[in-house]
Image (tube, rainbow, N blue to C red; front, side, top):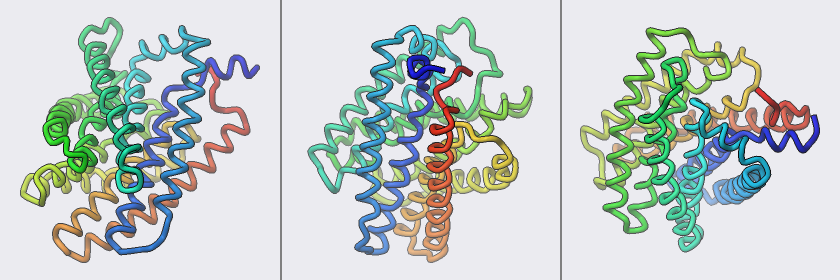
Length: 318
């Protein structure tokens, strides 16, 4: 296949790579902060995340300019549509990662992501409501992505002094999480199994309560009963996904494998926050174990992705 055609098939569902990298970055930032480490792993990963986002965004903008029909087809696709907010989420996460390093640049990234997130959320919800071709079999946990983007806003938003903006996005995100969680379980329990390339998206179940917990603690300034409920839900879904691991790793590599990365980063950060709030050593050990698992999975994902690029198994027709 020519390079001309490969660019036409550059997929929007490649942007969760940025979510995974920035989640890993934030997990290391949090680890260094809590343990008082002088390491610069988080800083190095911040730079890597920015470079990867810039490269992917450049390729996708070229695709948009040369093959607008291919982008339009992704917008109309019942599964790929939900991946467009991963672009705005990437910007929000980059702003969050830069908050302590470059506050001005961080706010540029963060505000760009917040504005784009609101636009994409409204667009996606309108597409859901006014659809003509969506069916229950199209539903999968990737539909959480637009909601997860909203609950990420307060994590840096409170630091930037944007309290009302943070509460608005948190509220929208949590409401959509409850609604979509119900639909996802209806689809999983009472309809045909998801195709193999979408099975890794089950890991996304971890992200909304885990990210919601971190954001909620930021918003209220401490741990309360509702915060414990959110953390408990995130931890349960982590255990559930862990029981599915033997099935997941029998699958051939798909880009959807990156669905493991950001949710695992989210529960790692949530565990560190829980340790900070409670001083219970068990949460520290949990966070350290999750960080080791996250780092191992990230290395595996990067190796598998590079191999897929070299073997030209990405950017091909489905």
